[in-house]
Amino acid sequence: MTPARFRLLIAAYLSCVVLAIVGHIVTAAALPPALYEVVKLADSHGWMSSWVGIAYLTSATIATIGLILFKAWARPMFAAVTLFGAMPWDGVTVYPAMEYAFVNLEFVLAGAILAAAYWSPVRDRFITKT
Image (cartoon, rainbow, N blue to C red; front, side, top):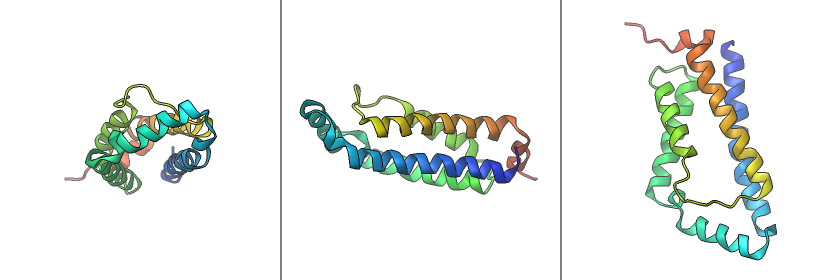
């Protein structure tokens, strides 16, 4: 894996993040009424709409920028943010189909980013020089 391909993988990941958000906004209202009520409740009371969500999004942004810049601290931070984001903190979650597809692809790409950051030739770019 080259640095350019690694950054392209990050760009694909970020595209999925944006498309998942767009998918949520555009298609949530098309859910059956009972499911849409669950989504509206989760949107207003979920962890992502609290200070925890703001801290998560800030950490995710910092970790992703760190990966793009090949900072050594970014690998474990991105791993932690990815793990934290994958946990079902809100219990049962309802996703519109488009959002669900991009959220799953987002996690696959996050795994690929972590695998490349730790176990491909690009890992040498993350080693701090003393």
